[in-house]
Each structure stands twice: as C-alpha cells, then as structure tokens.
Image 1 (tube, rainbow, N blue to C red):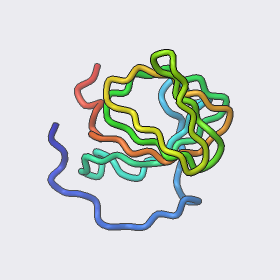
Image 2: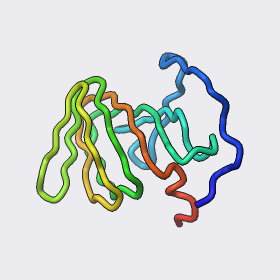
Image 3: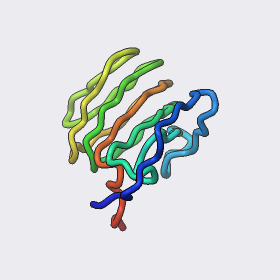
Length: 121
C-alpha cells in the first residue's frame, strides 16, 4: 500500500465550501465531503458525512473513528446497537460487519488506511 511521495500542503478549509457527493449505492442516504485521503498522498483519510434516513450495510475495510457533530448514529453490529449523539465517538476496527442507521446526522470521520479500495474489484 504505497501512497504518493508528495503530500498536499497545509491548508484550511471552510465547511461551507466543501462539496458533498453521494456515497456508493447509498447516495440518497449518505453524502461525503473528503478532507484528506490517498489523493493527497496521506494514509489518513478524513472528512464529513451526512446521513439521511440511512440504513447502510457495510463491512469496514479500514480502521474508522466517527465523531457525531449533529443528530445521532446507530451502528448495528453482531446483534448489538452502539448509539452516538453530538460529541460522541464510535471506534470501528477493520473487518467489522455493520449497518449504519440514522434518521439525520452530520459526522466527522477518520479512516486508516485511506487507500483501502486500491486493488479492490
């Protein structure tokens, strides 16, 4: 898993200027605005995600931390519901099978490695 030898320069970004785009097949339920990732040459991926009436099954292919900023998020895994509201965090280790559930939420995420999808078919 090699990333670019050049990383993006230090920069500030205004939340209001971030472009949110649909995420995978669940674009009506989740949109993201990437801050850092493999395109920047960094192994740490970060950004914001908006969930709306979300029920999204997924298997985590990276380590992930979610920080809920607005609303609430439920992560259902192994028959257990883990709920987080504003200022709460959820830790998700690679390999976790789950479902993201949220009526409405804004979260900040951090993932490692950012290039998890490279080479995936």
